[in-house]
Image (cartoon, rainbow over all chains, first blue to last red; front, side, top):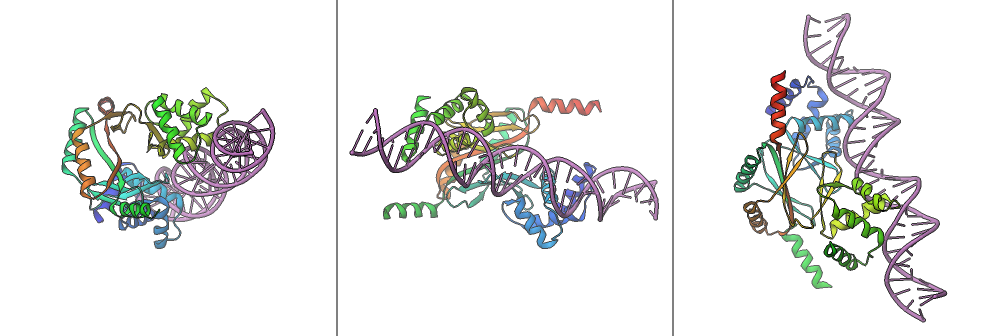
Length: 151
Length: 151
DNA sequence: CAATAATTTGATAATGATTCTCATTATACG
DNA sequence: CGTATAATGAGAATCATTATCAAATTATTG
């Protein structure tokens, strides 16, 4: 936690920016969440701590947090951006159910290894990656079968 | 091409919908594009063929095309959805340069195999997947080094 | 082919997420 | 302190996307 705050402050400094109270509040709040969070959800959470914080500031700050490498950006079904902090889990991929939307996180060393090989093959300097497998989870498969047989 | 048109029409029929002239124009135009296309870009292309086609129709239609399994949906940096048709290339993954934005497509059989294993491990019925590696391409790396040494 | 029912269309308005503007406030630093 | 600079919050503006609705198109049926 302190580690992340320090890293964020360091990043801000490299860009001539300042660590302020709202930024700290937003980052602390963000770090306490789990999973994938829209900017709007983060705004609501942050306002529980300090209701004066503005929407624009949350958007600006979560963007900075992502730039600093403390969060990963993604996109939910509704086309809104979501953020997930990387504290604690250095890396993982996603397995998403297209029916109920739940997300299982996993990490596969073999895949990681192949990815590194691909970066090398094309002469890229690696920065990150995201992988999302989409399918139907066991519960929803059962539900679908049940519904079909009822008809 | 005809194959895709037929598949789309078949899909529409299963949903009680109709293959119309605008839908056909949009799908044909879409199939002629390459790479990742926003709905807005598709609108512009389509209007070169038939300027009367409305924006709403393009949004509605590209959505249907994706549902029919003929296109894959993604998200660009600006948060807009993009579409890529699957005719010809049944599947591939992306290697994107964070500096210049260009995208290299690749396919790694070993990764595909591991993905199948992961679906099985969690009891998911596979539907699809997307993987995007982000890094800096060789050209941009050179450009960055050059810039740094000039300073 | 005419009549009817259903779906689709395009224009426009509405929405929702994100970004911009700007006057005010907070922060850093000599 | 005092000055310069950056950050803030409120609200306006923008952008992609969706909803609304009357008019047009398409399918179906007699």
